[in-house]
Image (tube, protein in one colour):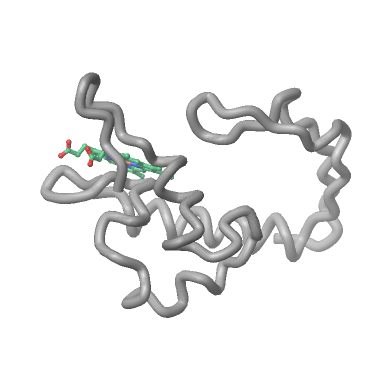
Length: 107
Ligand code: HEM
């Protein structure tokens, strides 16, 4: 993992986009984490690492999984802007992410 010594800033994007660790890092591939043993320690650090690692890590993952499940299976999505993004320092949609979401099935 890359650390900037002078300001102690964590180079998360550089680590997460390193194709030596993650082949085709820009590809959306949730299955890349299926074999956790192949990911070297401290190479996925969205939740930090070490003794001060985010204690809400597992809770947040489950919450996100459930939310995405219902959003994908019960709603239709329509993107209302282009998909360009910038880094701030994490990737964010440059023009926000306006969506039209319509519920198709009951929750
Ligand atoms: C997507 C959701 C979340 C992300 C990306 C996230 C990310 C992080 C990161 C990067 C840290 C710093 C870790 C470090 O210094 O190594 C942190 C710390 C922390 N997070 Fe989260 N977090 C999330 C959700 C949550 C949730 C749901 C909770 C509580 C229910 C939580 C509670 C905490 C606490 C208490 C700390 C401070 C830990 C310490 O300093 O010892 N986080 N989080």
